[in-house]
Amino acid sequence: MKSFFRVSDIGDLRLALDEAAQVKANPLGWQNLGRGKTIILIFFNSSLRTRLSSQKAALNLGMNPIVLDIGKDSWKLETEMGVVMDGDKPEHLREAVPVIGSYCDIIGVRSFAGLTDRQADYGENILRQFVEYSGKPVISLESATVHPCQAFADLITIEEHRTSPRPKVVMTWAPHPKALPQAVPNSFAEWMNAADVDFVITHPHGYELDPEFVGGAAVEYDQMKAFEGADFVYAKNWSSVESYGQVLSMDRSWTVGRAQMEVTNNAFFMHCLPVRRNMIVTDEVIDSPRSLVIEEAANRVVSAQVVMKRMLESL
Ligand code: AN0
Ligand code: CP
Image (cartoon, rainbow, N blue to C red; front, side, top):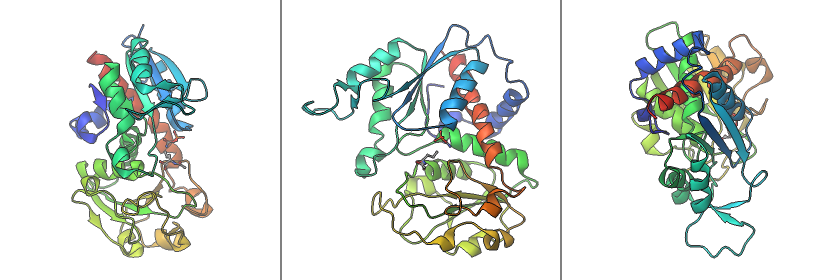
């Protein structure tokens, strides 16, 4: 595997889920595969789960992980081409990326959407430069438009908990005080469309996601109607795509609570974390035995390990 951004990069999902189960059952079974190999994990933004689970996955495979926080541990990096660098950024990605590439075998990059320039974000300006100038396999650790390690971990979690061959999965928008990227819902939608599930997306008007990621999914603007008979409820806030990066609503009637869960098929509750309690979901729902949020986070090691394992196998 040369890069990991889109669901198509993982190939057959059934095979990927079988491999995930093998890795989960025997996490130290491939300790020799990564011996003497280095992965550099680049963070332009904060992270708890991604930075820990990626390091843990690399260690399980015998690799040496190195983590770099851009702008804190390193120089601030300019990401736009053709600019006069007279501001506060002393180095350009154009040099930094090949330098990083010369020190490692695999690169992981976290670079959130800026949420001001839709075209730049949806062109994945930063991630593309890592692919183009590093010469190494690149993993998106949530880039501007996708979070594939999260979506893969979520699919593994659904696979582990489903009780029917084709469960109903509902992704719901929920309120949040700050503008958040569309990367998590984009990838979740893309992966659910490719998986064996009935997938429904629900959100207020104005929060339509990019059609490339929505694909053939059903979109239902009435949240209660969408939740009827659901086996899994996946909550997430995102900012508007059309009014790019804007918070259009803080409507707390969309907060996932008991009333919504009662119309489901005793659904499991899912969220990628970090989550704002009593904005996205009530304490009662996230603390209930049907909440899978910790299991999802734990599966981030498994998804990262499958991806790194495949990259090591094709080095
Ligand atoms: C980020 C987001 O919504 O994309 C990261 C989620 C994994 N969340 C926040 O910034 C709170
Ligand atoms: N879910 C997730 O990616 O969390 P972090 O932002 O803490 O890495």
